[in-house]
Length: 344
Image (cartoon, rainbow, N blue to C red; front, side, top):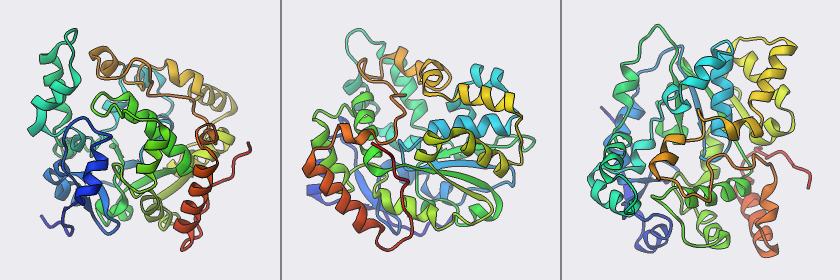
């Protein structure tokens, strides 16, 4: 199958900085028209992702990572499945949504190195080895084998340029974007959470990598703008995290309209309660309990954090604030994309 892009290794000085984030010695490269950062393992299934056969009932939830993806996934799935809370509670979100690019973070050719990086004497190395091997397998074959009688819900963090170019001719996509300063903070904690990464520095050190596009799936602005350009396509719903946070019922109504669903007030109230950050933190279906139990996550971090818009102000000093403002202005100069303002 054809794939139009070549994997180009990052520069040696960039690789040195990227290795500050990842404990495992991945090969990193840039791919696609915007030079999206991926691992070399992505090329094992890049063509299959790009050429994925689509169905009219497919629903993609896409984003740059840590932009509200999990929140949006649960919202979309429940609306599309007529508020089936029982199944949502009993079937983990990761099983309801194949994550088509997760495999590139677990290179199966480096399993021994990965297990060595993760495990301590109290952990079951063989069980972790099995888990890592499973996580490192591409899932496009499994997605293709899913029964046609039911809609497929698919998660991705790759930009639209790496997906099937005809995706919006056939399938639906809900894309969620978030202020890149808040994304940077959330990615920092994510890099602290997963033992495959375990970023050793503070936020300022992480920010100096992130705003230079030296993090997985960067550059973030190109990622968002590719989706923003398609916002008027009838098969695209573009959401902002800040809108979800400010007025969840209004965002729920937008998603419901997009999916051809309607809610009464009682249903709306229950769904808002289910999607509250307090409920999310307690929801074992979405907070990676299995990985916690295996010891793959740091004990002092959590997958679901504060769910706060504008929380970046607690992390940025004056120099970083000015740097971020200029970074955002430079990257939005050629577009009418604007992130919603959030009160202090």
